[in-house]
Length: 110
Image 1 (tube, rainbow, N blue to C red):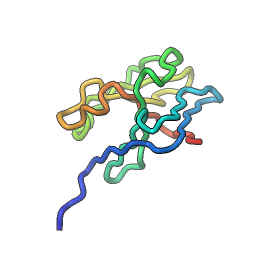
Image 2: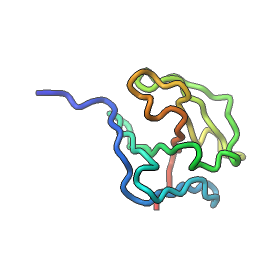
Image 3: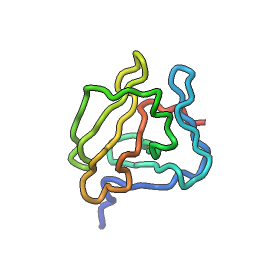
Image 4: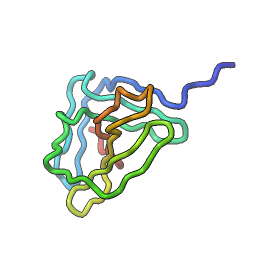
């Protein structure tokens, strides 16, 4: 029996918004502008191209991590909300589709 891949990427076929403290950070209407990353043992996460994220509201955090399945992670904060978003600037081979895209923790999708 074949194993399901650890990580799968799917286009998002719905309108997506991300709010933090009442601030709209992302609004995606077209299905091709966002990806849902499904990873074994983790909740699905939406990834957005930076041009669709209000990056000017975010600051780069000092936090960094490394995921063996995606690569080196850079985090972003919004005011007192630390590490609310992250990005893989140089993802590992096979994950290039999310290079420089941004994901948010605790997304509020509408």
